[in-house]
Length: 286
Image (cartoon, rainbow, N blue to C red; front, side, top):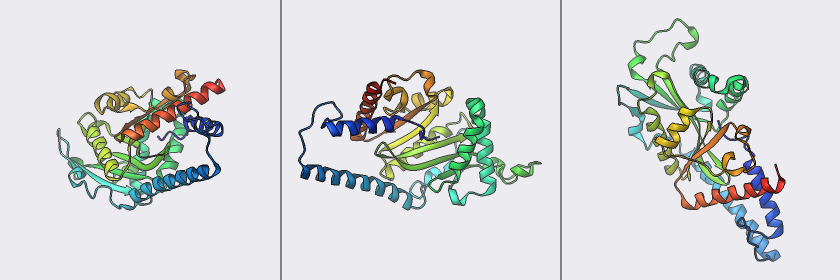
């Protein structure tokens, strides 16, 4: 799930506006007072940068097949698995694929969300159909030929064993590949498939001129946190509430934003946004 409910950005934006009015940099050092001409030029530069970020995302979506340049990643044949990847855009989802996504999400996430699952399920159904959503579906070749089901609602999905929901987005003025969902069925977990898919996400991000990969993980999902932080070497991003909101209690937020950023300037930018957010929360006192 994306960090759409995060309030870090709003806090940073509030502080940034205050600082700009006072002529203060994000580091807290007063800026040289700008002339009207200099202010106009700076605004023009900021608009140009914003347009460049938007164009980067647009170009990423316009590339067509996200797997076209990664043919070796269309198949995963290791550790007793024989998996084929198939890509879809939101408008291309079949009824079978939609039902599969909903069932697997409930199977994997209902226990983690507990009483909040009904609202989370509704949110995910809405996100599923949004035009920016891109999918990779995982088909198990071992079960595609001989599987059968008495449940009509599962007919045609017997070989589906997982999916990835990804998007190209701008987070805190940074174009990134955001992994909304990576969900695997029980029988294909702990076979190296998750690592394979995340490595693919990182390759797609680089090829699409994204600055890195981001995702959101529930704190109660200990297995996922261990996988991303320890095995995949992601970090808790500076814009995650546990980093950017110094007055927050652990129970105030039930998620962490994780990332792997490959661009040094972007890392510095996110650290600066974190400092802005921290200063904003402290100045507001909540």
